[in-house]
Length: 88
Image (cartoon, rainbow, N blue to C red; front, side, top):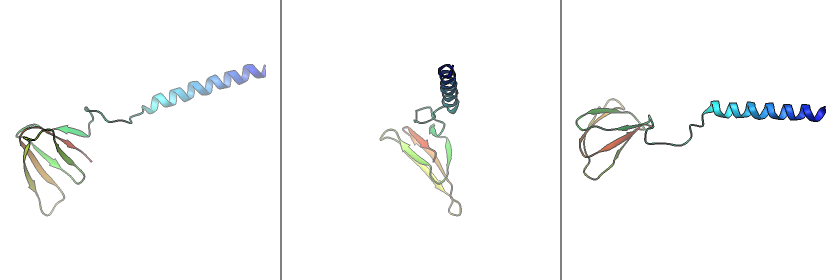
């Protein structure tokens, strides 16, 4: 009888632990489709905040950058090539 109760409790704990881990979702690694990474489009302006990083994906990437001196915000436009923005 005690062995049966122990096995039932162990099974219940394992099921609850599994459900908890599934509900957490992991969310660890990064991927190309991550919402924190934006693929830039030529002739489109993007607002950058402190911590954002523009990453050219090839050597032909050229940008137009405008900085407001009284604010911590910049505007960047991709002129040629390709690049991404990593929000940070």
